[in-house]
Length: 95
Image (cartoon, rainbow, N blue to C red):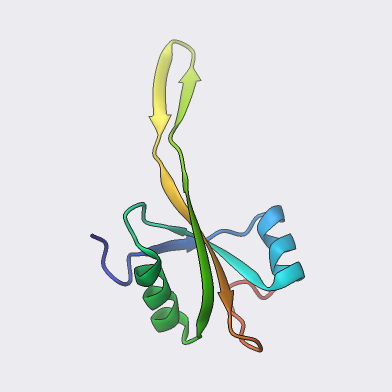
């Protein structure tokens, strides 16, 4: 079970996540695969000092990658979509 501060690995800043932020103020994070929604909520609220309203999570499956004759897998990971209380924002995503 992940620690409260290890539940959230890093923010994901992609073209799709930037569009979601601009449209509905939704932030995207990479989380530990075994972290629950309550652990992710507690980690974001304690790390950034904000109030989380809604969380959606999904598991990204492991992918098989091939280079020449060698085959390996990328690990699975969890993605978390987080919506904050109105009027709050995270400094990580501000440009």
